[in-house]
Image (cartoon, rainbow over all chains, first blue to last red):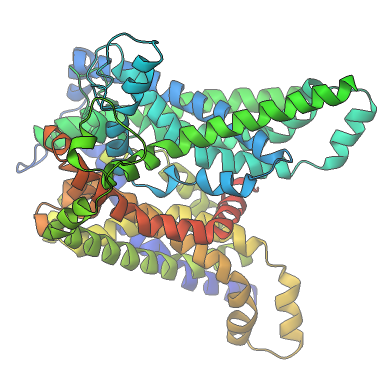
Length: 292
Length: 280
């Protein structure tokens, strides 16, 4: 009986494993390998050891794209969690018109990143025909319209804002579910002990959300670091590379200049960096949990 | 009395905050709608208004007049439906097996699901491009469908596992005791309970294919084969800025199907993501 169930499982699992193995595990492993070759599209890849990485160390484009990638990833992830938590708390409070808000927050989610980018292009038009510039000049906050996406100092903060906007729905929906799973009795007990709103938030809500927050911070961090479509639609990495995230840089190297080996090497470094940061973060979280 | 005033202030502040969120999240879409309905003179006016003074459908006519928009929609639909059906056919039985019979395979597959989330798409597409080119599948719908299938499989598997975990095994055992066969239990007990989860997971796979841009940009070169996002991405530069009206209309047309599906199925989708991603 036992043996039959193992066989039965293999029979069910195999159709799934084979295509994944063929199209996901093998390419991924060979992708990692290609990062150690001088592969160019159209030529045969030749193993060249660490040459790509030595070249990378002296490549100023690499350093700047990763620096920008970090600012973007930390900014967007933090914004998505903090603003997402705020929205989730509001949606969990007993307010009217919540159903409407719950439908509306799904709007960015339902849109392809490319359309999100095009849509924001229209909001951010460089002259006062764009609503943001119009509003800010009318209110007297700025005297001249700003070319948000083409300005060296504004481009990065602007795309971070749009990035936060795009990820808010998912984050707040997940956090909302976390909030709803915290037993009401805990709040009642804390209230009886004389805990105010803030104390309840700190000692009941936050600990109750801990697992959910750790999970979405990790996922968001990975997704944001690997983002592509939205920024491609907004700035294509410009102006002057000020918003060239690692993925955009790797895409240009691989598919514009044909340096596939170098692009794969960049991919390898991205995986390394993200996993190192995630390990540090998760270790810390678990250590704190153990100490509690 | 004082307490009441305080409560009232808090409520007002909360409504104000909620309103700010709603405006922030929905305004770009409202503006898109407004742009799509405005004549050019109003779109490029230095004193723009939210409500069009002379609304017009002409931008929609222009947008639909372009062959490639309709082709893009058709291609995206076809690829999205195909890949989500294939993903479900692969993931549902597998998830069921993984939940009901626990062996070493279980751990290996779930480990892979997690690790696969780490990898940037560039690391997948470079070797896949090589493989697909050897099979002469680049620039074909078969190739991109395969890529999407593999791309969304891990997460769909994760979601389905959550749903199946939610079905008490006692239900199945009870049916067995009543003399139902293996197949009958699956089709009469498990499948009906799983249907909402299957719909939500399928929807997830469809939307991720519908939204996907990077793989399509790299793989599909012939204009008549491209998906909607790639078609629209041509308007990112200065070309798009001179034709904002038709562009806005195309974007709306491209968003409507998913928006309708989302509004319709939001509950199932959300609970599906919950049970898949957060439990455990």
